[in-house]
Length: 253
Ligand SMILES: [Zn+2]
Ligand SMILES: [Zn+2]
Image 1 (tube, protein in one colour):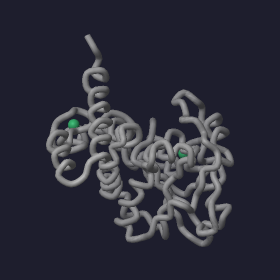
Image 2 (cartoon, rainbow, N blue to C red):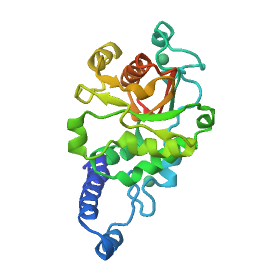
Image 3 (cartoon, helix red, strand yellow):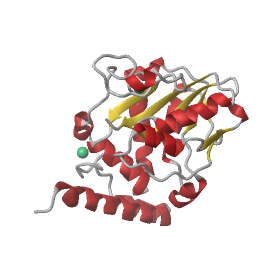
């Protein structure tokens, strides 16, 4: 018997890929017809109505306050994890709202690999409704950049689409050009250690002059060990940023 992934996730990703392709090619009345034929469906369970239904969302495991404040690794009590305790401060805090899995993984995959850009505002809004969001202080939002080759292939940076909502809610600007990704690092495999992952992104980013004297809020869709966020923060601090925090939809645990 085919597993759940074959039964639901694969047909759904085909559904979103084909509906997104149709939406791109149509406008006006034809577009309305496409919306009628392909109404919004939950990316996880397929139920019609919302891109992420209330039931799937309520079942998605959230990361509370019992985490390392710098890298969001779950801990028994809120403090610093062993790795962060002995590291120089690069990233002041990381706010990760969900554990990466289930409906949240389906939503992020649909955004990145099935061209479902319309789910980015849904994910952005979920960040802003976390109680810890109100504690953030920043002057500017900077999305974690894609390398220009990957940006050309995908056509958009998913972190920038999420960052737009975050910046609007904080009432500050977003600067997608402040940080550049110089090295096209391959998607990092789950099994690799924190040390290997850190080496994979070292010196991969360069920050522009706009960082000087600013408190920066980095935005990304998902983080695994925090290596990419730390490397981004390192470049921004080198360019004169006074403080760097990060907010992500999900963290792998
Ligand atoms: Zn659902
Ligand atoms: Zn940590």
